[in-house]
Amino acid sequence: MGIEPIKRYGVKEQPVAADELDLKLQELDLCGYTVLHSGFSEAVLSDLRERLERFLSEQEIRFGGHEALKRMNEADTLRAPLIWDEAFLNVAVQAQLIELCRRALGDYFIINQQNGVRNPPVSRGHHQTSYHRDLPYQHFVSSRPLALNALLCLDPFTAENGATRVLPGSHKIEYFPDDRVVRSLEVAANVPAGAYLVLNSMVFHCAGVNHTEGPRRAINTVFTVPIIKQQIALPPNLEGRYANDPWLRRLLGFEVDSPRSLEAWFESRQSRKA
Image (tube, rainbow, N blue to C red; front, side, top):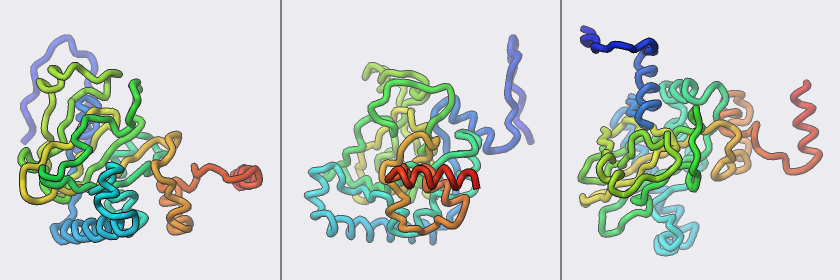
């Protein structure tokens, strides 16, 4: 049963969504965020939680311990998890998510960054509780999206455990509004485990405060048009993995990795002519 048509007058233009993804795209256009179900089973989510915790521990050992990382605002964040384990690449290439990115960003987009995030209980805190854009320090807007965030919620996002707070529509304004406006308009995005919270990367958002005893975890993948450089260059760190798959090669940024020499530049130009 369809919904009852909304009464209107003076309306001459209205795009009609062809499918569920078109509805999500319109929500992104209007509000700057939407929720997309992944279809991942609880077994897959449990496995991802275990891998995230294990690699966070390994990262602490590798880079000086938890306190050292905390001083750098790097505690509880696993950088580029798809480098650590292919399971995290699977998070980024879910079919519906990729199709949503294609409709929003066009046919050519790349994984700009991926981070595993653990929002700990309030006693420890997390630096992402400050409002920001995921293209930070930028005060401009564009007529079309330049980047999308897709946070796969490994745990439910709730008011109690610090669900991401979003300022709807802020991807359309250049400035950060007065604090009183932010407090009156911000919303907490309550999202079930196994769903993606998809954001226009220019929408202002922040992590909420986790008042529970357990962590709230997510895998955040940022997709961008290929003119924006990657946070951590993926091709050299992947050491040739996926380079022979044309689609993954493009998605992971092998084709936009900057040439390291004049010779490499001219080799790349020659290969385009072949």
